[in-house]
Image 1 (tube, one colour):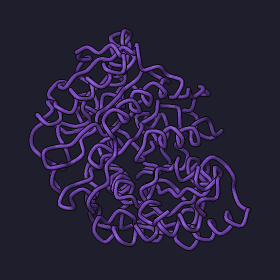
Image 2 (cartoon, rainbow, N blue to C red):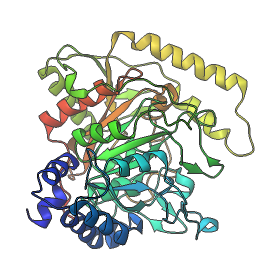
Image 3 (cartoon, helix red, strand yellow):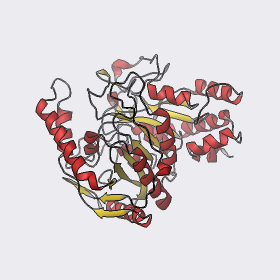
Image 4 (cartoon, rainbow, N blue to C red):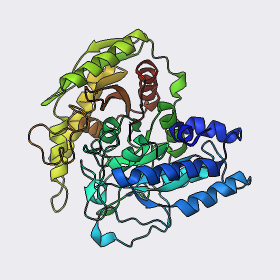
Length: 432
């Protein structure tokens, strides 16, 4: 297999080729390190490369030693706010330059135990929160489909390197769209899992270790170029770890066991003040049509509004302010309204943002409607959200859609995403 073909292979394909010994782990790691070397000067996505240890791990696997599991020999990357033992963890803050993690986040450890090989860490806004991936330590990350455009944030470095084929799969975090927006802008498949599905142990922000009571909106998510890879990695990282008190021992269903025919789907292109542009609405219509063709029952229906306004109140409570009891009660009421309204649907289909990736700097502080308006409500509910590329803008930029399922039905969200991937093509290589 050529180097280019190796880079373009999905994580599941690489795992199969490595198991059959059609590829060696060293061969796979070297191919991705070369790709990072080629694209990183343009997109500035990887901020801490662990090449020596990655190659050493690959040599161990090729010699028949090392960890075994479903991702044996498959490279991966992680957002810089996740601890990875022995690697720098500045998280974009000059005061943290020189800080090195002494342990792995639970999800990083589980990936290694499944045989995956960590290539390095990726760029994010300071402390992993923000809609543009830019910071005073590492600078700005660019979109692999057009380096003049943003990959979004805050998992923008992760989305950029996976989209550029420098890493087959990666882990990010999502509070209000931080996995979903970058996945959309970079043409990827992704999931923000049900709140309480994946441990956040080892995820750090400016206050230290995050947790369910500190902000239950924040989840570790998976980004990849294929829905199958997202499901594969989610199986590896999900489940209680004995340290994260917000986890529930709920079994993870298999997307392949879900019959898309007969699913009840609500589709909407507007939500409160959020209105998608013409190209996005066209892609959304194509996605709705593809699901109808797969046998799903699709109808236009708009969920209750107010989720983004509540999110803005939550954001305003950060820092010296305190989240008020009244806000928590309104948050509870919103979750109850969503559950009651959503009883008749298995999936909510909507845009991820109002358009494709804007120019660098075009998200932070822009006038008008916040581009995260379609994403933030589902962080308040804690429902699982899958992302998949469903088309392109007239300029050839990726346009993804959001597939939201009811709590704990991550399998349904991923099954619907996989159906769209089969019908509409999913990820496409950038020209970079």
